[in-house]
Amino acid sequence: MSETARNLSLEEMDRNSVIHPYTTLGDAERAPPTIIKSGKGIYVTFANGETLIDAMSSMNCVNVGYGRSEIADAISKQAHELAYYHSFLGVTNEPEVRLADRLLNGLLPENMSKIMFASSGSEVVDAALKFIWMYNYLRGKPEKTKIISREDAYHGVTLGAGSLAGNDVMCKGFNLPLPGFFRTEGPHHYRKARPGESERDYSKRCARMLEELILAEGPETVAAFVCEPALGAGCAVMPPEGYFDEIVKVLRKHDVLFFDDECITGFGRTGNWFASETFGFEPDIMTLSKGITSAYIPLSATVISEKIWRVLKDGIPSEEVPLFASGSTASGHPIACAAANANIDVMENEDLIGNSARVGAHFKKRLEELIGDHPLIGEIRGEGLMIGLELVADRETKEELDPEWDCAHRLVALCREDKLITRAFFGTSSMSFGPPLVMTEEEADDVTARVARALGRLTDELISTGRWKPRH
Ligand SMILES: Cc1ncc(COP(=O)(O)O)c(C=O)c1O
Image (cartoon, rainbow, N blue to C red; front, side, top):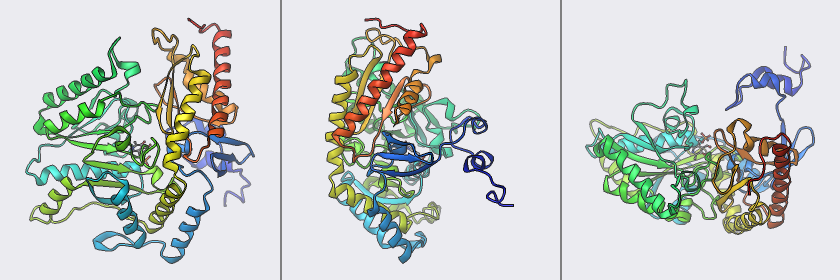
């Protein structure tokens, strides 16, 4: 009998049938799921009629905002003309070709040369690892395979991407990380610098730690260093001053590739098309997803530099490696690529990259004005519309709030009660914002007011329960 015939609600059907990502699985039996119904601009509406500001663009994805008919129409048009054909063996389609061409000619860093599309961020992170390994294999360095990621990093869930996780929670029980994956410090000047250590000095120390790890493992065995230019799951942690200058010196010295995962930071999030521009570095290989279609439909990409392309092109085919045996059914999916083209049109026509920089600066300033001096606020950080705030028990000593109280998640819950969606991450005392890039200054003011109210309520709760009192 069908679920409808059994007269079950959507909530009951969900509870009976769906496993939700990143949940304590039993949760489904306790709390009813939230059913999302529609969205417009920066607002989303739930099935119960409640409308909220989505200051996270869902998962840092919906960069052009909800309800853009330009993208819906492009998807519909392409579905009618050609919904799908594979991209294997030299077959292609117009949206795919146009998308790759426009990304490589004007949007991506100049040294980038070729693109391979897929569907999810995790998938292209794994594809990037294959490009990196094949590059070294073809250069006659088959032992140069080790990959270094950073603490607090997030690169996805497939076996390769999961092995790059900067947090053991993503590895335990899954037999991860695979052999050959290592972690260095995730740079968080506010939390990890020594007392009095400048951002520059801390950046140098991070580079030294990276070099020590490369030397300990043997540079002839280390293939790549992978990073999100700004840590997303770490709650919008920005690189300290000079960080990439120092890191790149070490990578070049030891012939280690620079893998720049821009699944979150790409497509305007930090106020430029890509964070490589915001932070001034030139990667060897990049991954893109989320904002590439504003998540109207799944699409992701691995982008390789001319340096990597030349080695692959010259080395394949050979007797040993007759072809680059990788790619997926949905590579270059015409509907997804058509959506990406329409998405980039919207971004260009409405200067959403400029808006991200302008409104991001305004938003950060308003947060600083309204709550910057609050005794629970240690740091407000960010670039463009990737902004985070760090909670502390004591602003002077940076003493952390008791993790048992999980204040960051409590603050998220209080924002949610005021109809504002924000995000906190496991193991941090930070809350982050990544709103659609269409957000206006007035909307940023509204978000700030709601955050200030939620922070006030958190303060009252902590004081009234005797858990904390202002120190200064
Ligand atoms: C930086 C980064 N890389 C990769 C991924 C994985 O993407 P997906 O969830 O689409 O597999 C994410 C997801 O949040 C991400 O933030």
